[in-house]
Each structure stands twice: as C-alpha cells, then as structure tokens.
Image (cartoon, rainbow, N blue to C red):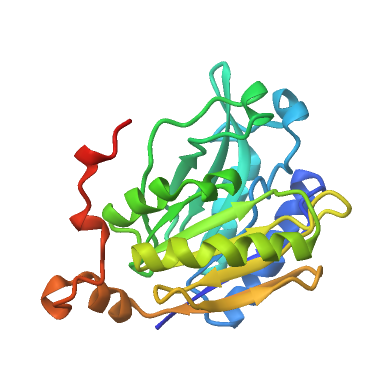
Length: 264
C-alpha cells in the first residue's frame, strides 16, 4: 500500500505565502507517511488568467526552485500547479517536484473557453514516475470531462490520475458533479482518480474526492476547510485488474477497444 495526499487550500496569496502553505502541508504529509501530495491547479501562482502576463513563471524562476527544494527537504513528492511562461506563450502547468530533486512538468492540453483567451494548450499527454514507483498522469480541471484523456493515460501506464482544480461553484455542487463522473473514470480504466480544488471563497468552493479502480469512493472531503486528505493505493489491485491472464473475463477494457470505429 502506498499512501498519497490531496491538499484542499486557498491559493490566493503571494508566491511566498502559497509556498509556505505547501511547506506546511508537505510536513504534515511526511508525518502521515505520504509518498506524494497533490495541490490544486495553479497553487503556486494562484489562478488568475487575466494576470498571467505578469505572474506566470519560467521553469527556472525562484518559486519553482523553492518548490523543488521543499520536496527534497520534506522527502515527499510535491505535485503543484502554476501559470508557466515559455517564450511568448503562457501555459497552465502542473509540476512534479520529486523528493530526489528531479522535476517534470505537464502542460494543460484541453482549455476552458475563457482560458483560451490567455493560455496556449500543451501538446502531450504524459505519464510521470513518482519517487515511490507509482506512475501518474494529470487531468487539470475541465480536462476531467474528457474520458479519452483518462483512457490514454491508463494505456500509457498511469495507476493514479490526479485532477487538480481551480473550479468555481459551491462545495455541494462540486460534490454532486464529481460523484457523477469520477467513479466512471476510475472504474473504466482500473485506476485511482483523485480530485482536489482550490478553496478561495466565494469563487472556489474547495473539495477533495478519490475513486478507486472498483468505482467506489475511497476518500472525500467537502467541509470548506484547508486540510490534507489521505488515500491509499494498492498496486496489486491494479495489476489484478489489468492482467488478462488473471482475469478470464477481461475486466480491464481499454486494450480491447477498436479505435478504428470511433472516428467521426
């Protein structure tokens, strides 16, 4: 069993204030025995598309170096979001800052209608290896509504898909939405699907929810308080589902799809 964490928190402070919260939750995650903790979308910079030209970070900027240092210091992989600048383009990105000092970045590939005015879309659906050996992928906020992304990540080896949000609305609405489609993403692809949201009242209502490979809710918190939500991943469970030799009834469906039939 591998223990992971989700952080539900407000991310509307300065870089320094947001990183201080990350440090606090990283210490709590370490004390709880977590291998990694995922923070909401744009947790380092805050989610402010209209300010992206001013606050977007380059990959070597000090706040991202500090995030990497915090991961090494805490011994916990930190998965944290930021608005990223490269050349003349700005992306919504999520960093994988590993406890061993390695760092990788996912750039949001599917943007919301308003986001398209401010950000460029990323061009790759990638999976990333955590220090603990788990392979993970990301679906940032609106991307969770694309089941094809989850399936692609699963076929590329993802055992956990993290879905960090900066989603508007109240906690009750967010819970109702996630309980509708998140279990399906997890069940259809036999993985853990883990969501966390910013908690910046009145705009972002917070919330954390995890569904496991059997489609059951494994963890949930919608109490509108900054906190760390824990869940555990059993890699053997995923292996049992995904190995056809162990399942005569082929309970892992993506490898048996017929994509030639799906084009419009």
